[in-house]
Image 1 (cartoon, rainbow, N blue to C red):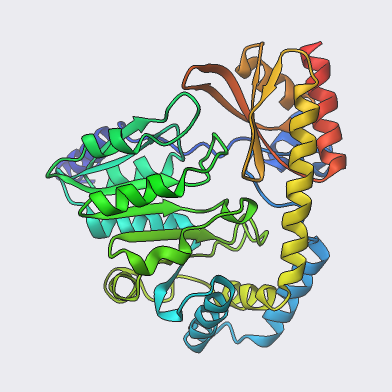
Image 2: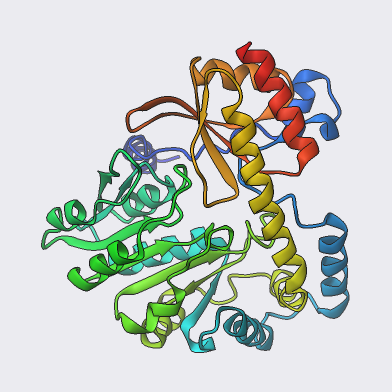
Length: 371
């Protein structure tokens, strides 16, 4: 390698050190090997995946999708068909939809579209770390504004921090990891009083009872992200969409989105799932019921405080150090997410809402650790 190339790689390495790493946590196979267990003995509750969607149903959908496609051909008409199906599901126009490789891809697209070196993006604290990653890799400055102590959105404070360099505001609603949704009027206040894009990640909106999709046509600057990783149980297929007014969607789709970003099998699978939407609605209701049971069960444990949730996960606080609790849960084959400090609340962890047998194993392990 030439000296010039060495110097370039070295510079790239040093510049990248300030960027955070997205920690995916322990994997099922990896933890099973460490503990000498079978993979099916591991309880994975750290990534908010949806285990209420029947696996047999998803496998049937995937098999039918594979049987119907020609993987040698790029997806064209199928993407149009998907937009039409999603438009019916969301009660909007197909022209308002942009398809992407999960919502992460579309979040990054909006960051690339709106930001250049020296620009600024605002967001909230705490929230999903991908927003900061996308902003900083675009060469822009990321400024998080803390939520209020009750986890509500401080729209006034966000607007007070807008400058001539602010080109983007990222929100997650319902928010990760606090699991609460923000008042619609607060988000609308941002869209009304900010001259650039307000981007709202609604990854968990289906588990709540509200979405801003119905008002995107009222604002030139509002973009909504939806993912099929959570509610549809398709985390492994990587597919999502962005919704906005048709003009903004056209710009995103034709000028900034890469062609053929989503696999043909993923497109077909979502279309087929939308044809069986009652299965999804049933799963959503099961999540909501199990979520309330989990919150009540957690709050019965001495030294635990579980926060209310509008998502498919629950944030809870323990009287013991959260890192120690996390490690001890791992040693019992249970994977959760160690969040740590959340505003004024130390020792917080996040657990996915899952079917009762998985919750029973988690609660049993947690009780043993905290007793």
